[in-house]
Image (cartoon, rainbow, N blue to C red):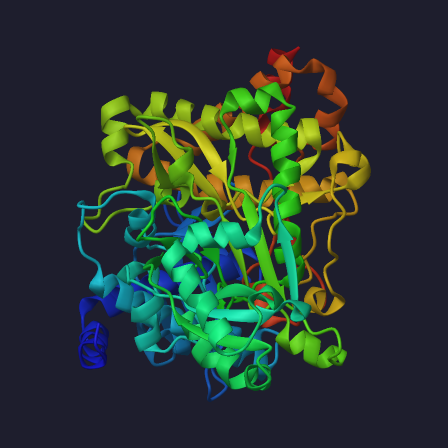
Length: 609
């Protein structure tokens, strides 16, 4: 998309109906999170048999009191709040009217919250940029059934995080960048390739992989030889360097302007643009090779903030990626249950990250995770005949025509058989990892690929392995198999208080898994199926309880582990994703919530007995 066309599209989007539709979604999601996390305390009054009204007190800029009123449900799924489609009203001495803008609401409603102007301004910017970026995406959205593979679906199913109010902020991308690198626009991205002197590189690969041979295969012999030839023509020894891809935005905005001294010394050498075309996935920093669909996907750092997290590629995660991948695959290879389940770990087979140990600590922190890459297996080469792959996040989304993505699947197979197959494909391998092995996976929807046959769920693939699991070493079934891990630096824990794979207690591991998988992932699915298919939330959670206890009945020898990682506890701790943006990140922001599985403890326990 040329710049004039992009700016024309930008202008048209902002004056289209998509702006107001998107603003209503962002405002609804913002309110749901702030109410649920008790950042805003509402007066709650009954509205109808299953609906309530929330009245929130705020303060106008002139100091006068205002109220905001919205209506919705307090769900049976963790008590999550789901507002209805009615307008959110502002009530003051001047009268009652709909909320004029996100800024008006946030400045007035949060005026009585004990935060700082700096943090409020940061949060407001993330909210506003989410409105902008999603408006552009919705305006450009087109029904397109011509391509339906996993990479295409990652762009077509574009709703983003279902709970986080800053689900598409992409702080750092201007509108042209958003068109050029946002997955919704299905752009073709060519990577910049550099050579990094080995003494500044930390390299990790899976056993049996020679990086030079691997990259020669990934790039193709001609392209690989061209890059090596450029080094040699500059009088440099190719053996002293590692080839490294860089996202073009990262090259333009951070590597070229900030690391130019390394380019001047030829510790980094610019090799040029690669030939293969890539498509960005939902996480933006992960890209699939569109030219060679079976080739590895590449994870690259991009110095933007999205869903309130910086999208660097942490050096410790890069270094841990291959050993963690090997560890999980070794567990699967020795476990007949996991093998029979068909579970796939999408291995991160190689990783390179830039480090300069001679820099003072504050500069190391500044440059941490700025330059690096991880190569991850593509699911395409791991599918059996007749299987297809889809983003798990798509199960709770509607397509451009407003119909649920799963509509044709449910129509073909029936809701109950389809849902039972989904639970059977998903739940047993994940809870087996928790119960039998002591590993809690961060199984939110973006980390799971659903593998199906004509829409009928069969099995799952898990990705983002090193940054997406928790364990307590002494509670692992085979602690000796666990690799020695690169530690999380203290300055990263200051940025993200929940960083790090090793937890202190089994309860932390349980909550980590429960939060991602049940609270966010299946919690959203329960609300979606209720809305679109009339499935009662109680029925949804009862099916899950039956599936868990069916597994437990099969493995009575793990009874002590069922108690240790108690999925039926009365409450669990979940992360406060909105609150952490309004308060300093000095501690993990967690809150206890009621567990919808708890009500089935006695009933399911009797069945298991």
